[in-house]
Image 1 (cartoon, rainbow, N blue to C red):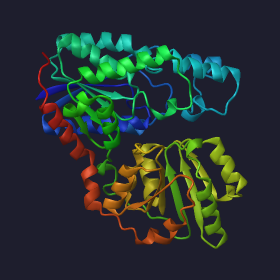
Image 2: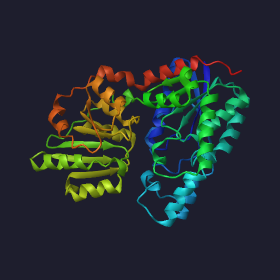
Image 3: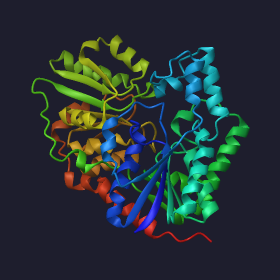
Image 4: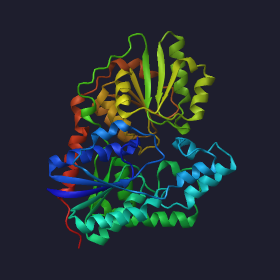
Length: 422
């Protein structure tokens, strides 16, 4: 059996959504002839914990953990927060917080940490990786980002040991959405562009989780055309098997699972929901995860507080159950090339999906082919959704191609194509 080293900053018990893709791919790869091992950090101090994910890890899987320089410990101290206080992603990059400490922290994050705030893991990860590779024959290195600094670790180890490197980009790099609206100095931007190009150039193969992101990268770097692949984010069929959850009979739950930020605030749609309620519709809005303060304020101003439930962070298994309990599922695509990972779990539930996104042909195509939902432009009232939701019958046979067992087999095929670097 060939061996592959996965390098991922996020790993259980971190509750970071990003880790679900590598976690399941690693779980299923041995069935396709690849034995994985994992290099990760001792502790993700930023994200909420999800201890339930630990049971997904095979006792036979070798997992190496290292320490790292964690700037978010300094961030907490700088802002007067306790070290065990959870951080909220939307708050750390908030544009509405005008306090001097916050603005200083944003400037440092955008201009001194290149390519990202996890670059402090690089020295120890490279050191531990070298120790491991000296005594173990590894046939491939796979890095998962963001954080995209992980790809620099993989590139360094790949070059040092002549091992093929496959970066997996779950989000864009330079153009990742949370950089927008923030100024990065020219030197920082030039260095980050250099890092991105060098990783793409030296990689043996590159994996993207959306078709649009792949197309963007190939347009930017034509040399990627022959070595780029799309493996969708997917979902875990195991999470749904045998799951029996009955939706409430007396109300319709409209659920958003995962973080929703202020720039995704759908005020016209909230007004549509209010109108339906005023006409006798028993609709309840439910949010799991972080909710932007402007969204909460919009719902409060509309008098919807008594029809809204904020659940905060929940373990993944509980999130799946809540999806199954819901009547409708809400997702907001940030930009035309954004394909939210939650969409695939949504598809598997078979519940009607309402999606918002401007000119997002990838989301629209998936919803249309599976007959699972409708896509509306941002700031659309979307009254049509409630009128047609009952006619949406998801084609689950078409959805099953997104099962991560299938995606793991596709990943194995990519690894099988690798050749030793010259």
